[in-house]
Amino acid sequence: MSQKHQRCFGLVGLLLCFCAPFATAQLSTEDHLAEPGFWPTQAHASRDGFVGSQACAPCHAAKLATQRETPMARTAMPVAVAEILRSHPALSFSINKFRYQIDTHATRSLYTVSDENRKLSYPLTWAFGTGRVAQSYLFKKEDGNFYESRASYFTRLANLDFTPARALLSPSSIEDAMYRPVPSAEIQRCFACHSTASNIGGRFDEQHLTPGVTCEACHGPGANHAKAMDESVPTKSGSAKAAIFNSAHLAPADAVDFCGACHGSWWDVKLAGVKGVSTTRSAPYRLVTSKCWGAKGDPRLTCTACHDPHKQLQTEASAYDSKCLSCHITSSETKLSASHPGAACPKAIKNCTTCHMSKVNVPEMHADFTDHRIRIARPGEAFPE
Image 1 (cartoon, helix red, strand yellow):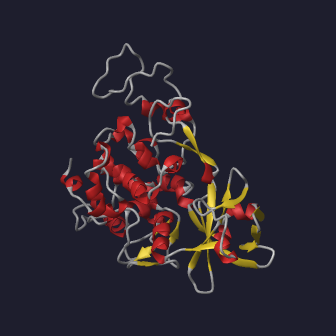
Image 2 (spheres, one colour; image 1 turned 180 degrees about the vertical axis):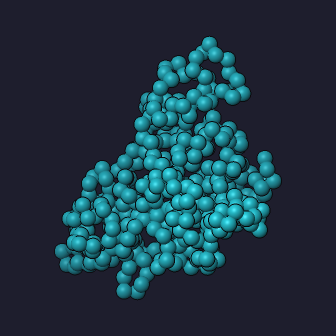
């Protein structure tokens, strides 16, 4: 284990002594952010280092073109351009005495909650999520602060229901029924994962952020790299490549934590207290609980080994067979080896994930999620924590 992983950081360091062996190679996002160097969601001293994705086009035109169409690139947007709301101009659901509505006209979406006595309405400001599964919303009140709508759109329902983890069946007031105040620190964390360059100088910069996850959200500010490439001269760090961050060079445990900064690392999920089927939403967390992950991880099992963040997510099971067979032999007559330590499946060598990465229904999301805990999933078994 590297010296970096031998260090203990706060509560995580204390808990490491009592947890399963696979956890010893992982860190929380907070701990990674405390280390020197770039890490996703970190704050930046100034905006000077950011040049925008278009500066990447001269060398990476193909990647830029496909990345712009991914859900990550569109994971946050001003409500005025939220296609889900424009294509569903009248959304509503009712529970107990409260009725929740989002009515969209032109570029404005009005969020309303009413009961038999009162009605409150506010225009929505930000939409989070492309709607592949769901989309949630923020708005501001007269005080200028952010508030989270208790109603979200769910694709399976083609309508509204309670925002995940925000259901409130017995609110004390219509205000309580309508929204949840969002502290400024939480706003910074939310936008850090759903936008690019939103945290400048320790402050949330709503006016100048780039909606969605673009190149510099994962590779760091690109000004020095772009300049060095243009001028073909060494940078202070020694080369143009050294002036940009590339997660491809990370050790397996760090690589999964890198994606886990927004998708839920092992320690982030544990420290948040999330349990049960809801943990399926955090693929990095579930992945490292797989038996084949091992004590230090395997580069063939990192997130980007199977998913190219510059391209659309592949949803066909057959698309991942080659990844499974990079570890597993295809016949019981073939001997195991260092390069292929995985035994042959006695059932099939096609569509592996349909059996070994089963779909799990997450009730609050009204959707099924692929469980990234790779295993032999047996019918009727309890959900493995």
